[in-house]
Length: 238
Image (cartoon, rainbow, N blue to C red; front, side, top):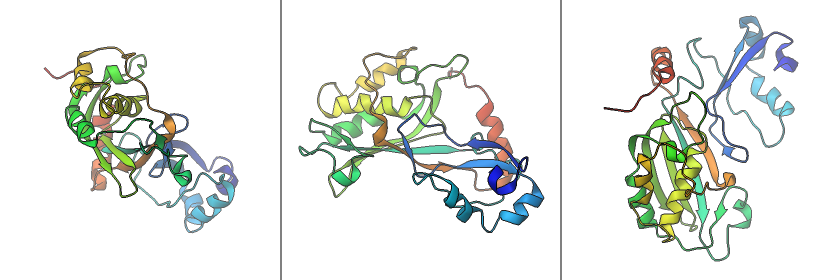
């Protein structure tokens, strides 16, 4: 940004979600603090100018003014990811091999769906997270489902208020073990009683995962209150 607004004209870049190396994002959101006079001079041309500076695999699609209470990370209400898997004998389509996991065993989508339903709600997902000192592993999983698209690709949609490190990929890895018949359907949910990372869960490869959407309060007046809720440390329900 310094190349566009000058030294000291922008600061405090914050992203909505930090993804593991190799994970894609089509719906990432970030905010940056820009001096009012600097913004007035670049608001109409910022997207075009960023396109000329960023590498070809990074693009900014929109840039607009938000209230100072907005925080790309803490004001978010939900984050939605998709994980793509091909169980075709031929593997992932050549045009999608960078964002689709090739799975060598046939997958039972009905088993995947039934096992996924048992994981919904607020739980301690310690078994599925890489623990960080002082960080909670309690999360509210509001959506976890599977579909098979017309091209035969299976897509898992995962949505929660927030995720801890490697959580989505670990959930997918556990469910794939159910889908190909190596584990019973209740198994992923039984791990929710564990309070440490479970070595039996294989973390699905990063390249199949994409951050597709980050949601915020519909009313701008809710940005600050939502940030306060997000910052509050979660404890297990009684």
